[in-house]
Amino acid sequence: MMGSAFGSLLLFGATGDLSQRMLLPSLYGLHADKLVPDDLTIFGTARSPMSDEEFRQFAAEALKKHVSADRLNDEAVASFLPRLRYVPVDASQPDHFDELAKAVKPVAKDRGLAIFLSTAPSLFASTIDGLKQAGLTGDDVRLALEKPLGTDLASSREVNDAALSAFPEERTFRIDHYLGKETVQNLLVLRFGNLMFEPLWNNAGIDYVQITIGETVGLEGRAGYYDGSGALRDMVQNHMLQLLALVAMEAPARFDATAIRNEKVKVLSALRPITTSARDDTVTGQYAAGVAGGAGAPGYIEELGKTSDTETFVAIRAHVDNWRWAGVPFYLRTGKRLPVRTSEIVIQFKSVPHSIFKDRGGRLHRNRLVIKLQPEESVSMHVMAKVPGLDREGIDLREVPLDLSLTTAFAGSRKRIAYERLLLDLLEGDPTLFVRRDEVEAQWAWIDGIRKGWAMNQVTPKPYPAGTWGPAAAIALTERDGVHWND
Ligand code: BG6
Image (cartoon, rainbow, N blue to C red; front, side, top):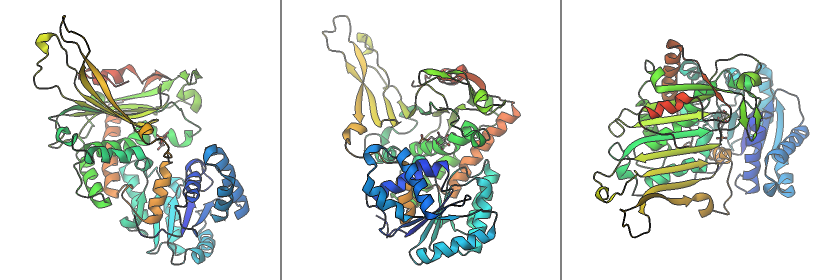
């Protein structure tokens, strides 16, 4: 447990999509479970003028829409809403920050202030300037930054420098919401809380790793952001590379922010650059008309209303060039309008060195560990077993899963929104599940290399019908190595 939690929270972008779908429901969840201080005040800011009362009504609507019925309790909502206050701020107007300071300072006093920036990146610098001018950046103020933190290494450095001009690294909390997911944290427990995996967790024991994040949704009305981003920057730069780092990192000496992040950044900096090999090591796609959720779905271009070369699918063959992982490919794949919503990590172990069953007709398959992160959480280890029988025609072996459904094992515990954990850690000052500057920059450096390779090689996305696993080339990417995607 951390020290006492901060007493006030200031949300920039309080009327935005993230706030409605995730932040307000998360804060409500923490409130309903009595996990935040009784006197926590939540200030919302956005451009539109609104009174405290109007913002509370706005929040009540968001809760009704985005909190599941079994968690929505009239009493808890009624006691949550008075925590909310609202101050309109146009980030281009410095005097608005004076008004903000007038409202926030008397409440924050010496109880600490956490600021959550979830606004367009173009407003970051002016918002931080405004906060500085208004004296809202002292030692007892923390800053959380929501993506996108830039669109490449250079622009992400600008964002980080702007933040650093007012907030030292230890008070800057960069969000990757995947790290707030229970299942993602569980990766650390699986690897470092059990003896049996670690001795094999290297290039002597593992043949390859696959990480897939499939989504069935399309643009979801986010054209303005998504079309300028694409799957590589939207999903690989952050979430997938964080998953890869957790899978590939060395054992940290302690469960703390410095030890864990030191190990992750070593992996991220050891990623082999993919620039000249971009044609061989990556495949990009863009969904065309097809099927989603059993019904016809339009293609990306139709949804967007204009032509575009933005990739909605990417598959990558990556390598971590260090002693542990030399020669082990990490196949990454993510996309919109895929057949299922799934996030999973597949660890394919190598063959046993010698099969004693071969002469009796028994065929061995290699062990495979499948870690499903969502929608349901499960871990299954595929092991060999003998099919019951007298084996007159030879020994019959079959692969069977040793299944652990964490959803069932922990039935009754509530599935929390990732942001509940992150907001609580922000208020309590625990940076373990936030991304350090050197990690983000190592991520961007690698992504920039790929984009440079695409530009040099004129790589453009190949169409794939909505509801399929991307273009055929994505299958060829692994098949060339004799590997099948775990569909
Ligand atoms: C976000 C991306 O970071 O993650 C979205 O911007 C994506 O495009 C989302 O849909 C996926 O998150 P989750 O938690 O639904 O897997």
